[in-house]
Each structure stands twice: as C-alpha cells, then as structure tokens.
Length: 378
Image 1 (tube, rainbow, N blue to C red):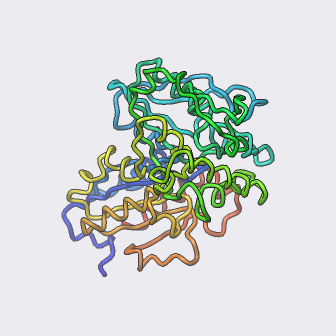
Image 2: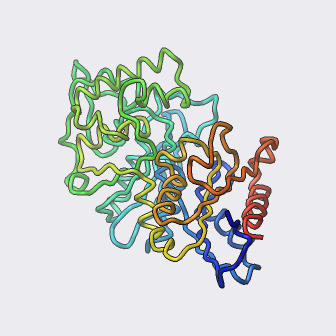
Image 3: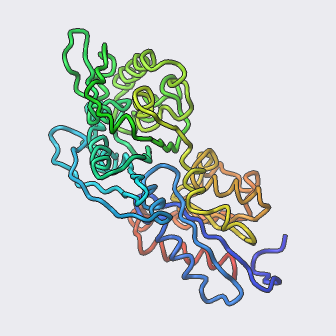
C-alpha cells in the first residue's frame, strides 16, 4: 500500500469528520484543530464535516447547517429537589426546533453519587419542547442520547399535557418507579398544537424496550440502578409494552434514552430514525466525499460499538461505499478491535496510557489530535 505521505496527486482532498471526545472536546473543536494542523501543506485541501449520532452534541452539529437562533429556557431538573436547569435548544427559521434530551435530562447534569434512575424524570425535556412550540416550532427533532432517565417518556408526555393514572384514578409522578402502576392515560390535556407538531426522534442505539438487550438491563445500571431496581424497571417496561403494543415496543431503538420513544410514539406523530445517518445527511457528508482522497474520523473511544450506528461508524461506512480510504484518530481504541477487518488504513489512539486528567484535558487533547492528523500526511 502507498501511504498518504506519497503526494503524487497534484492536490489531495482530505475530509475531516470528527465526533466529540465526550467530556473533553467537541466535534467542531476537533475538526478545526485538525484542519489547522494541515494548513501548512500546500498540496492538501480540507473539508470539515461535524459528526453526531443523536447523543450529546447533536444539536450543535445540526445547527451548523441551519439558519436560526439559540434559545435558553429555564426548565425542571432531573429530580424534584434539584434547582431549575437553564437549557438551550436551537430554533430554526423554518419552524424546526433542535433539542437534546441531554440538555435538561442528561446524565452529565448529575454527579455520580446523586444518580437516582427510579425518580429521575424527563419532565424538563418536555418543558423545553413545549417552550419551543410556544416560540412557533411545528417540527421537533429530538436527540435521545445521554439521558439519566428510565421513564419511557412519561415526563415528556406529562409536560405536554398527558396524565397517567393508577388503578385508583390517582395521578402518577412521571418516573421509572411509576411505570408498572399505569392503569390509564388521559390525553384530553394535550393541546392541539402538540398533536399537530411533527416529531423526529434520533437514536444512537438500536436496543428494544424490553428484554436482556432492553433499556433497563443495558442502560439503567449506568444511571445508578441496583440489580433489584433493574428488575423493577424491566417489569415497568414490560407493562408499558402492553400499553403501546408490539409494533412500537419491538422497534429497534425504542429503548433509547430510557424508553422515551415508547410513549411518545404511542401518543404523538413520531418518526424514529438512526441518528448517525440523519445527521450526516443534514451536514453534507455525501457531497463532501465527492473527489476526496482520504477521510479522517474519530471519537473518544473507538470499539466495535462504533461500527454499529455511531457517528464515526456511519462516516466509515459511507467512505468505504465511495472507495475512499479512512484513518481514525481517537482517544482510546479497544484492545479487541481489528482495524483491518473494519477496512481502516490506520487507527491512532492519542490518549492511550495517559493519566485520566491529562487524557481529558481539552488543550492537551487537541494538541495530540493535531499531531496525529499531521503525522498521517507528512
């Protein structure tokens, strides 16, 4: 194989398509740092494509391709005892609101010792959606990744006017511990504006609602659930599945963000889409690949899951379809990951072996990524 430093081409086009290094640097910061590192190479042109897949950072990436404005709104925190959260969303000029569950209901909003998945609620996310509608939004694109909740969307639907009742007709607080008690859903309080709105749900996982690969078993432990609570949440999801029906409950991705799609798709006109392909179609990756000689992508941790619908995995898939070589610059790479079988030219893990504080330091990370990208072409 002739490596990239053989600049036999009169000019080389490189597409930079980084996802975030979670907790450290954003997609935009990584792309800009990588581009700056190559600006001294006269025979190289670069195109930056921001990458996200429905998780944290999706709205920031989508906003780069849309005209509109950022809106900041006070909304409810994850737990009743917590103060309000000032959360942002992006209101496009065409009446689309770009919102992330992580903005008001995200795991990053809670310290580890404060996580309480049984009582955490998506009410705050629903309030953001309601605020967007009051500002004129008629289409909501909701990124589902990064949630701290497991309430199947009860909180969102309560914020939009639904009421969940137990067997005695009492109102249920919208959280994971209430799922198994739902005996009825009152929808008369949902305004026509919410019913007429269109909803696009972007998922970064394909887990179903229930079962061994469902939202409770796979994700609730990360959100602070004990083994007993996982079983209680699983039974709650099974109960919800009986309400929404198999056509929804068995859909791949319905277990995203603690099962948010389940009740939203049952009560509202929703479209559930894989986040990676949707985002990349919006930011113009297909057009950027035209005439490209190399694609460089990456994220904080690169492993087999990356190739199963994550943003960089979608980049790799599209580049391979066009016959374009791909290199990866990431924070860490899993030991059992085989770059050759994934069709990659090279994988560089810039944080391998570093202490955690240095590995997560933004300035240090950007410097190491820049050096790695430059090394691919010099």
